[in-house]
Length: 229
Image 1 (tube, rainbow, N blue to C red):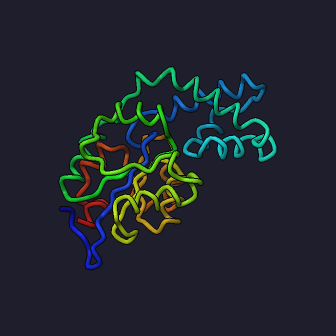
Image 2: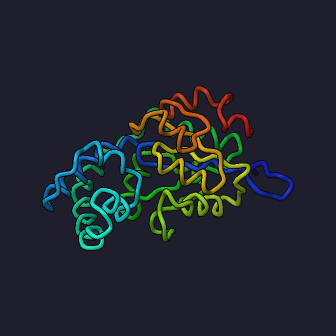
């Protein structure tokens, strides 16, 4: 049984998936770039990269504005989904991602995923990660009304774990992850493997920043996850 505090709340280690545990961010950039290009929008890849981690409608609004999003978000999202779906069978977990989750589960953490993916995309991510034995729950796009940077995905993950924010940590790779975790009241850990600079993650609320899951695992005892053991 996982350790609990005096009020019976478990510790939750909440993880984003895309770019944090599975190496997908640049695949998403490519798929969004092509979807936008096909619709007549010339959006630089760098701008798309900075928007990865937002839900589809929010991403389109961020890149094209609210009016364009109302008119085109559904079609653009469908095009992105089709283009990105070509990679499903080739998605690859980042080094030691599965081992990190298993180590935390063995240490008594409730490991929960909080992701904007859903449906077949989420299934492909889980297959690539191959760590279902360590995961106690998932808060996906199908379970929330607002995606990151709103706190709802993290709050849903905490609810699934029966955990309180004070004893929980959220690990992600984007500014949107750090903002969502901070708004949910949890300690945030940033990973650089999604391509976002350390300074941006720290400014958005990261309490610690590591290169990737492998480096976080190697530094676990000194990390915010270790300090809550």
